[in-house]
Image (cartoon, rainbow, N blue to C red; front, side, top):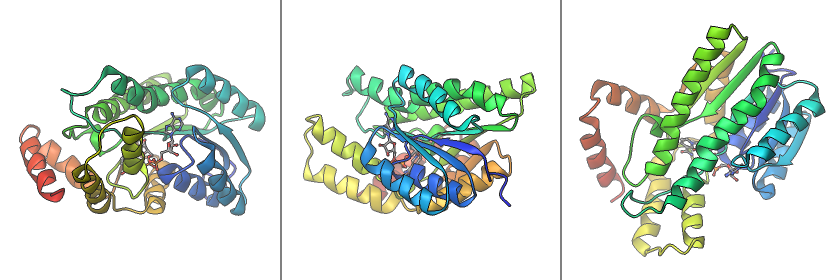
Length: 280
Ligand SMILES: NC(=O)c1ccc[n+]([C@@H]2O[C@H](COP(=O)([O-])OP(=O)(O)OC[C@H]3O[C@@H](n4cnc5c(N)ncnc54)[C@H](O)[C@@H]3O)[C@@H](O)[C@H]2O)c1
C-alpha cells in the first residue's frame, strides 16, 4: 500500500499539466485531495478524474499570488479535512522577454505566482503540515532553478529562489526536529500548456507577435517539452514516497544538472549555442 494512502494532499495549479497529473496519481495512491487553480475551467475536469479514481476531493479557485486568499484557503482546507499532510506548491507561469526590454510589471507578475505563490503556500500550510506529525512540503522549481537562459530572467530568478527557499525550509525542519519532509522538484521539459499559456498571455497584453515568434514557440513545444506529465508525476511522487530532498525529472534535467556542476562558467556558452541550433 502507498504511504500516501489516506493522506490529505494539497495541489496548487491543479487545472492543467503537472498539477493535474499529480492529482490523478495521488488519487490512484489513495490520497485525499484539496485541488486549487486560478482558473476554474481546468480544475473541474481534474477533480472529476481524481474522483473517478475514488478520491475524496475538495476544490477551490485560488490565486496563489494573493496572500490573504492563500491564508484563508489553508484554514478552509484544514477545517474541511481536519488535517493536512502535504502541500504541492506547483502553480507557475512562464514568460519571455529580455532584461533590457522588460517592464517591472512583468517581473512582478511572474514573481507573484512563481515565488510568492510558493512562499504563501508554504507559510500558510506549514503549521498544519507540522501538526499532522508526518508532513511533506513539495515545491516545484525547474531545470531553470540551476540553468539560466536568455529572455527568461523572470522565470529563472523565481526558480533559483524557490530552490533557495526550499533548501532553507529543509534545514529549518531538520534543526527543529519536525517530522516534515521537504522536496524541491526540478523538472526538465514536460509536455504541458505552460509555453503556450505564456505566449497567449503576451499576445493578450498587446505584445507584437511575429510569425517568427509563432515558429519559435512551436519548435520550443515540439523539441524541448517532451515528457508526458503523467510520467513526470510518477517520478515526483516516487521521489516523495522515497523521502528524496531533490527530484530531477527527465534526462534533460539530469544532464543539465551534471554539466552545470562540471562546467560552472563555461556551460553558458555551450547552452547558448545549443539553444540557438535547436530553435532554428
Ligand atoms: N512544463 C515544463 O516543461 C516545466 C518545466 C519545469 C518546471 N515546470 C513547472 O511546473 C509547474 C506546473 O507547470 P505546468 O508545466 O504544468 O504548466 P501548465 O500551464 O500546464 O499548468 C500551470 C497551472 O497553474 C495555474 N496557475 C497559473 N497562475 C496561477 C495563479 N496565480 N494561481 C493559481 N494557479 C495558477 C494555471 O491556471 C495552470 O492550470 C510550474 O511551476 C512550472 O514552472 C514546468
